[in-house]
Length: 80
Image (cartoon, rainbow, N blue to C red):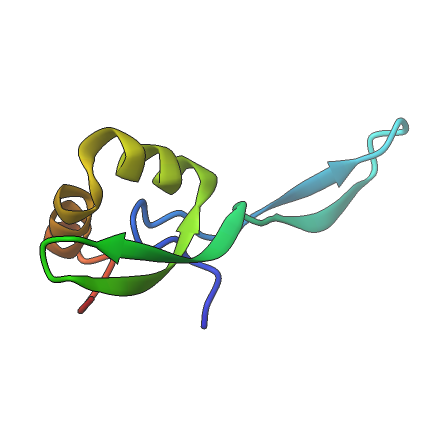
């Protein structure tokens, strides 16, 4: 699985490490991802997602069903 949140679409970003002498070397900024099994009561089953910490907050706020619908509409997730 790639390192992309299935709810928010967050993925790896590339930037620079900058030393005290201002030398720059490439580095990556990885999202804070978790593999979670979350219960979907509408379908009476568990859904396994790779979701970021921000995505978990969205699921808590909107509910899993609405968050999955929004993610599918934006193209972050194909099926659940």
